[in-house]
Image (tube, rainbow, N blue to C red; front, side):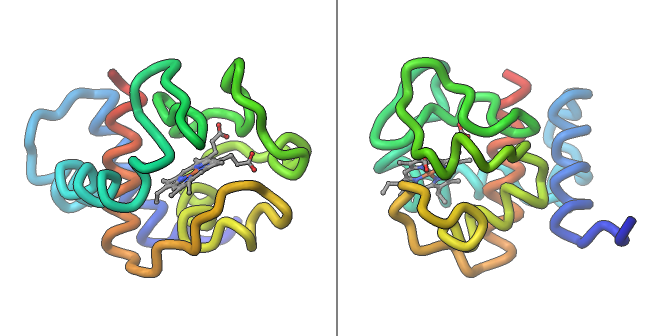
Length: 134
Ligand code: HEC
């Protein structure tokens, strides 16, 4: 297997941190800053997504999406492309999807150009990982 990229390592650390509940430690910071990620989420994603359980907007609720299988939210109508993609939202897949949705899921219906900034993606993943543990 390929060596994990910094993004993946950071996201895994963030997940471990979220699960183990390490309160405001330096480790959480190094992994990508969940608080900063919350701000990225607010400006980039909140128009279409909520992290509240069961709250779908234009896009499905992202509560607990970190590590989950794609296209599983009941009551949300996904594109055929997303339903048949067979993806699991690993840190690598989430990072790839957020950076270029149409590249990972061609024909999908998330109308978002992509987040180019890798540091912002790290922060965003830390934020999403934290919602999974709530
Ligand atoms: C313009 C609206 C819009 C924006 C902005 C948007 N999304 Fe989406 N998102 C969608 C839609 C619609 C889908 C369903 C895609 C499909 O079915 O092909 C989706 C699907 C997803 C999924 C898959 C969820 C699942 O249940 O499998 C993830 C993860 C996701 N978006 C993350 C993000 C993140 C993170 C951002 C911000 C960086 C973002 N999205 C911005 C509309 C949007």
